[in-house]
Length: 366
Image (cartoon, rainbow, N blue to C red; front, side, top):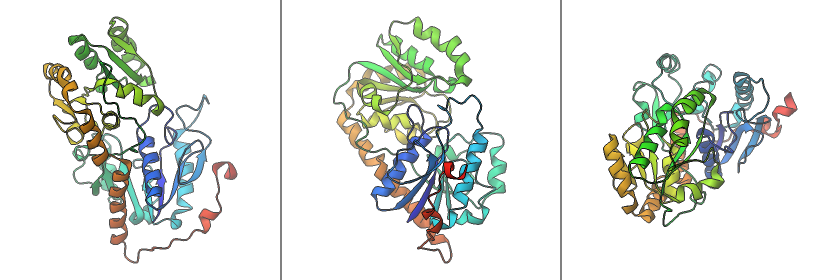
C-alpha cells in the first residue's frame, strides 16, 4: 500500500526529548516500511524516518527558538501539501486530531484519523457529529468513553521497536517518575509513595509553561526539601534505558483519563514493573500482578511499590514484545487500512505518483 503519515508539527519525528504522538508516528512509519509498504511522512525537516519525507517546516515548533510563530499557519501549510498529493495515496493517516476535517471531505473515505488526546472536552462532540464520514482510531478503549457515537473503526494500542530500549535484569533500587510535571500526572503522589517507603525517587520530566506555577508552588518545594528525591529534568530516548532500566518500579500515579500512557510500555521494554492508579488506559496496558500493579488509593500504592521488585522482569519484557512492539502496532494498522480499502467501491490499488515525483519541500514552495 501507498500510505501517508501526517504528524503534528509540535515535536520532531521522533522527538528529541519529551513527546508522545510524534514518537508513535516515527515508530509506525518505520515499521510499515519494514513490512513492505510505501510510506510518505509529512513532518518537519529534522525527522528521521525510513519512509519518504515531505518536509513542511524547517524544524518542529516547540524547540524552535523563533520568538514569534504560528502553529495554526504551520499546520495549514502541511495540510495543503498533503491535499495536493492526496491522489497519490491509498490511505492517508492523520495524527492531527480534527484539523484536516474541513479540507479533506472529498477524500474522507481514504483517511484514517488516530486521536491521541483526551476527548472529554466541551466542544469535541459537535465536531464529530458534523464530520461523521471520517473513520477514527482510538489508542485505548477507555479513550472512547466521552464520544461513544463517533465513527470508531478500531482501537490500536501504541508500540515501539523492540531494540529501542535495553532490557535490565536487575534494578538499582530507586523508583522512577517519567513524563511531565502537571497536576493530572501527580508527581506529588510519586514523591509521597517513595517517601513512605524511605526509597529514592528519580524524576525525569519536562515543565511546560502552562505548568510552571504548579512546579514552583507545589512540586519544587517537595523536591528540594526531600533528600530522597532527585530531579533529573527532561530526557530523550538515549537516556531512557538507563533511567527506566535501573528503576525498581515506574510510578504512574495519574489522576486523569490518560488516553494511553506511552511511558508504561517504555518501562516494560526495560523489564521494569509499573505501579499505576486505575485511571484511563492503565488497566488495558498493565496486567495486574504480571507487568505491574493497579491501585485505587495511596496505601495500596505504597504496598504495591514495596513488592514490585518481586515481579519477573524477563516476563515483563516478554509481555512488551508480544503486545506492544512496533511491528504488532503496524500490523494492526494494516488491518485498519485494509478494511478501509475494502469499504471503498472501485478502490484504486495503483495510485498516481506524478505529484510525489515532484518532491517539493516547504523550502521549495516558500
